[in-house]
Length: 182
Ligand code: ADP
Ligand code: 5GP
Image (cartoon, rainbow, N blue to C red; front, side, top):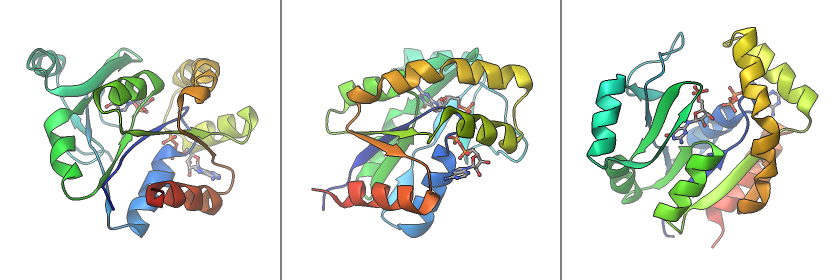
């Protein structure tokens, strides 16, 4: 079966990272692209694993060199998908990009066969609980992230699939079916 580019978006705290990690653990035919960002690493994050952490100068230079499939700015930092890295990985496996709505639509423009998947929360209250429970953000950062929620969810109709992350196992099964669909 042809390798797919799965582009996964959804509000911060909805469970994208958890779902992608579980999918990778289950499927040897799936890898995740590593994005570049100018934000600082969170505790436990390392360069080349969660992200390639670049200085703003390095990031701007790579934009000039047309090195990104897409890039965008969030919360005062740049985030981008390295083009050559994704192309290389697609030779061997299906590739997952975990990016925001604007980035996902840009990725679809660059690679029209991309499969866009929106992960949605079962409810706004549950999303808040997960975001607070994760404990990685300040109160202000949480408010900032929640303020984007309505916009992100309003973009659902531009996606190929919407997967509600209610029960992890159920949502995971849905992602596997998308991966295996013709
Ligand atoms: P994202 O990557 O979308 O920002 P995370 O994967 O970091 O979100 O998940 C946010 C929090 O929600 C984490 O603490 C995670 O353990 C929890 N979580 C993820 N999926 C579920 C689920 N289906 N049910 C309950 N909690 C979940
Ligand atoms: P975080 O700082 O929580 O890791 O990510 C913040 C936001 O940046 C999330 O909405 C995430 O999806 C988005 N993001 C991460 N990598 C990329 C990327 O390569 N491109 C774009 N456009 N957004 C990204």
